[in-house]
Image (cartoon, rainbow over all chains, first blue to last red; front, side, top):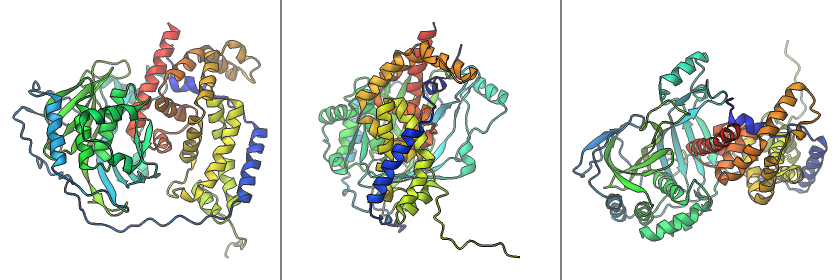
Length: 351
Length: 194
C-alpha cells in the first residue's frame, strides 16, 4: 500500500477540543491584557528611494561579465541539463580567484537605514501530496525581491507569476492531465505576496548571528570553515553540507563585508567533497566558474563570477533516478538565479 | 430609502491584522485572535510536547503574542504563521519534552484505538496506531530544522509559504527541508511495511 507521509503524521494528531484548557488559557491571556498599558503603533515604513551606492551591483545585461578562464563554457539555463568540459583547475584555485577579487573591492559597512536588495528567480521541485502512484512533480518558477537591513529584518515580495511551470517528465504531465489539469501555480491569481522579515539577525545553520558577528567572521579559509561547522551545529544533513548552504545563503543575500566574502569562498574549498565543475554561462549570458558538492541524492552547485566575487546561481541536480520524480540524472530539481543586487536606502527602493 | 446606519462604535476585528491593530488602543480586541486560533495552536503543541506542557505552551504563545503585537506586520491578514513561529520557538526550549513525546508515538499500539466515536475515526486511529512506532522513530531522527518544517505543515496545517514565514527562511529552504524530511519518513514507513 502506498501512503502519503504527511497524512500519516497528521493521523497522530489528537483532534479533540479541550474547552477547559481553552478557558484556562483565555483567563491567563485576559489577565495579561488587563495588566498591560495600551501600546503605541509601530512607526511607518519609509518609502524614500535612495541612490545606488555599492560598486558591486550586478549588471544583468547578457554577457556583461566576462570570464577569463580559457576553458569550454557550457550553458546553464537553470532548468536544463548541463554538460561540462573536464575541469582544468582545482576548486580551491577557482574559489581563491573570487576571494582575491572580493578583497580588492572593499565596501563600506551597511549603514543603519540601508538595505541589501536582491532580486532572484527560483524554482524548486514540488511534489503533490496524496497518492504517490497518482501524484506528479512540477517546477514552478517565481521571482522574489528581498530587502535586508543590518538587523536581518526587512521585506520580501514574491512574484509567483513569472515563469511557466515545467514537468520533469512525461509521466508527471500525464498524471496532471488525468487529475483534470489543476492549476499548477495557484499563487498567480493572488499576485505579488508581501512578507515582513523580523529583525532576528542572520540564520546560519542552527544559530542566529548579528551583523556585528557576521562582520567579525574571518577571511582565512580554514578558520572560516571551522566557524561555519560550529554555526551549522545540528542543522542540515551534515555539518559540511550545512556549511555549503550557509556559504550560498550569505553570498547570495547577506550584507557581507569584502573580507568575509573572501573567507566564505575560501572556506568552500575546505569542505570535503567540494570539487571544481568548470566554467559555465547562465541563462542571462553571464559567465562564471562552478564548484559543486555531491550529496546522497543530488549535487549542489554554486556558480560565481571570479572577477567580481558575485554569486550568480545556486543549483541542485539529480545524481541518479529517484522514485519520486520521473527524471534522469542531471535533471535540475531547484535553482536560484541572482538577477540583480545592490544597497538601497529604503525597503521599497530598487538599485 | 437609505439603509439604517448604526452609530455604535465598532472595533474592526474581521481579520487578525485588524484585531491586532485595534488591540494597540483597545487591548481586549486581541481576544479575537485567541478565539480564532487557540484550538489550532493547542492541537499543534499537544502533538509536539504532550497534553500538559502543550496546554501551558499554547497559553504562553498567546501571552507572548499579545506582548509583541506592536511589532506585528499588518500587511499579513492571517496571523497563524506568526503564532506558529512563537509556538515553534517555545517548543525549541523544551526539546527533551518533545523527545519524550516522540518516544511515546514510537510505543503506540492498537490498544490506543479503543472506543472511537465512529467507524471512520476507528479505522484512522488503527492505521495511526499501526504506523505510529515507525513515524515516531522517523520524526525523532530528523534534524530539528527539518522536523519543524514538516510538523508545521502536518500538524499546523500551514502552507509552504506560511511555513517559510513562520520559520523566517526562504520558501526554497522549506521545500528542501520538507523534501528531505518526507523522504526520511517515507523510508521509515517503507521499511515498516516490508
